Image (tube, rainbow, N blue to C red; front, top):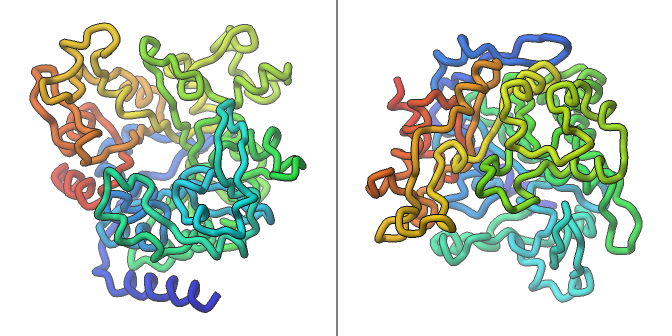
Length: 429
C-alpha cells in the first residue's frame, strides 16, 4: 500500500503545480418532472466540452492515474473512467471486465487458474475477469498498453502504474488545481446486476450504479456540474434518475451512450441494440415498469427489437429528456456517415485506404438540440487507422473531422488526445 500511496501523492503533487486555468462547464440541467434536462440556448454559448477518453490514452496506457493526470495537465474538462467491479465490491477503472488485455495478469502464475470463458452481453469472451479478483489481488497487477501494435511509444510505460479504484480517480479530480469533471461509464450493468456469475458459478448481483453513487457520497464529490454518468444501457440510467440519485440527495448529468445507429451497417447486434432492452424483453419482464412511457413513443417495444437507430427519433429523444437524460453520446462515425464498403468498395475508400465520408453531418445533433439534449460524440483519435477522407478523397486530420461536427453544433467530444482536443476547443473562441 505504501507504493500505491506514493504513486498517488506524486501525481497529485504534480497536478497542484500545474498552472491554474478557468474551466467553463456546461450549464446545470433544469428540473422537469424529476429529470435533469439541458437548455440548448444556454449550451450554445459555451465552448466545447473536452472529455479525456480513458485519460490521455494517446500518450499513456488507458485508465491509469498517470494518464488521467496528464489529461488534466493538458486542459481536459473531464476525465472518463470505465467502471467494473471486483469480487469484494470495489469499483475499479478498466475498459472491460476482461482484464487480460490491459494488465499483466497473464504473467502471474498464481492467477493462471482464473482464466476462463464467460458470456458478456451475449458475446463469448476468454480471459481473466475483474469480478473474480479481490481488490488486494488487483493491487498486485500492473497496467499495460492495450493497443501495443498501434501505440508502441506507450509500451515504455507498461508496468509503471497500478489499476486505480474509482475512489482514487475521484480524488485525483478533486486534487486538480481547477474544477475537473468526472465522466464514469457503467460497463455491462445488466451483466453485473442480473446475469453474470463469478468463476465459482455464484451470481454476481452487484449494482454498478448503486456502488457509483455510494462512492460519490463517500468521497464528498457531489457537485452536479462535475458529474456525468454514461451508459449504453437505459434501465440503469432511469434507475439512477428516479431512485438512486434522489435517495442519496445528489444529482448528476446522465448521458445516453449510443451504439451504431446506421440501419445499413448495423448488422452487429451487440452494437446496434441496447443490451438491457434485449435481455429484459427476452425474459418477459415488465418493460413498462422498467422503461416508463417508452411504449407510447416506440410502439414496437416488446414486439420487436428496439435499436439505437430507433432511439434517434425525435419522440424518443424527447422521452429521454423528460425521463432521465441530460444528453446523448453518439458514435462519431454515425454523425459523419461513411460509404458502405460492402456496397461500393471503389467509392468507399481512397487510394490510400482511408474511409470516405459520403454526405452531410447527421441530423441527430440538431434533433437532440431540439429536444433539449446536449450531444457529446466519441471517440476522436489521431492515429492513422482511425482517420478518414472527405467526400472528394482528401485526407482529414482528427482536428478537421472534429471541426465538421463542431460546425454542426456538437457540444463536446471524447478524445484520446486531450491536448489536441483542447487546441481545437480554444480555436472556437
